[in-house]
Every structure is written in C-alpha cells, then in structure tokens.
Image (tube, rainbow, N blue to C red; front, side):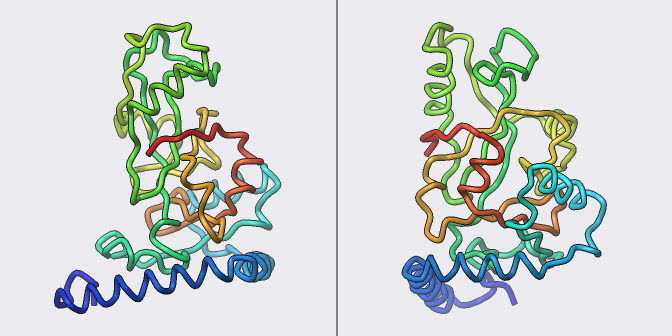
Length: 228
C-alpha cells in the first residue's frame, strides 16, 4: 500500500514518525557511518543491469566503490510519496537528484571550461529545488563577474541533450560515470546533512547510488554552492 492511499490522519502520523526517526539518525550519525562501511564491504552487484554497471565502473575509476552502495528499488518506487521513498536513507532530505542545467545564453557549446560551461550537472535535494538566480550568481562569480549577466540564463536541459551528455535517462541521471565530463555543482545544503550520506539515481530508474558526501566531493572535485 502507498502512503498516499492512507487516510489523512495516518499519513500525518507516518510523517511525524519519520521526523522522529530522522532526528534519531542525526544523534547516531557516527554509528551510522560505521555500519555504512560494513554494508559496503559485503555488497556484490552481480545482478545489475547494464547502465548501473556503468555507474559501478565509474565508482571503480574514482577509487570509491568500496565506500558506495548500489541499491535496487521497487518498480513502482516513483509512485510512492517522498518520505516512503527514503527506504534506505535516514530521511527524505538525504534523497537527492542529478539534473543537467543549460546556460542557454552561453556564448559557446563547450563544457571544457568549468568556470564558464554551457552545461552543468547539478546535485540537489528533492525537497529543495534549484534556485536558478543563485546558480547564475555563483557561476558568474567563477569568472569574477567579468562576463555580463546577459550571457547567463539557466534552465533544465532537454532530455535528449541530457541523455547524450550523461548516458542516463530521466529518473536515473547520475554524476558518476557520465559520458562527458560535465562540471558538477553540489548544493551546499547537502553538506550539512547528518549522517553525511546521500542517495542519488544510479543510471537506471530502479537503482540508487548511496555515497558519503565527503567522498563525493573529494572524488569528483565538484563545486559547492548555495542553490536553495
């Protein structure tokens, strides 16, 4: 049964229970990290479809597979309410998504200059959408504001463009193992999570990648910006 199918008072009771559980996770953050390491050490991924295999290889290439978890989810996962989707995560705030943002006014099509790229892969919490004005200000600051504001305008890239750049379809976009080295921006609010782990799409709509925040930042050398 889905949470949305329950009576209003039952849904509210579940939300309250989840908040209580999330608070408890914060209090035992260090213990959570130790259990995380044990879980990573015993995982095998022999039944991964092809695309999550790409994510797995991407983790190997970064030297972080032993710190990550590839997790299958139910086929009706995206019909669930957000707090119900936090199956393995400490809270719904730990559930994050990767989206490709395009600067439609960029003066070129290139992604080789991370300080002025046509495209960025942005990691944000489901509960906090990207503030495009803050993203504009941050990206413009990468060039010390030498480029006029009129050459910045961010929006979601077309699905076909996102697929061509990342190799992943909607619902499975992952910043690890992308086809092209798109510069990555991580929302600063993610760095304040306790325990400090996030769950992302893993290349396939039925798979998730769990990864410690510090591991992600250190291995991808991503930007961190206030995007909320």
